Length: 186
Image (spheres, rainbow, N blue to C red):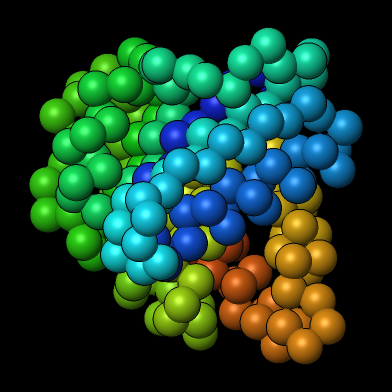
């Protein structure tokens, strides 16, 4: 994708949305794109709110503060309730159905529901639910080539953390397939 786009990724602290946004930002930068990464989180270390806006563009980005978004990735119900109305018509909404028991109330967006817990477990990495969700977004939006994200995962989990790479990439790839399948039905 060569046009400018953005995504809001939201959940509770500890669910990995900031990391997912960081991986997307690094992958886009490594592909020569302009990027902004704007995190927002509550004062709690875990369990509080945590979200990040990632803007990706072929041109310099004027401001990372955006009131409506091209896409939304949510890990929990409070995030869906707070942010689903901020997605522009025609956008993408990715919902973690293992924690969110309702679909978005939008019929003007591509909606991807992902049981991130189950998919991550099947991929061999219970803790990679955030990467399943990132994969679903990448698969549905075609924001950046999946191989670029996989390279960012390898860079993030280097050295002593390298043992996490295979499961993380497997979880990401499973998400990509789910996202692609959902986008193909629209």
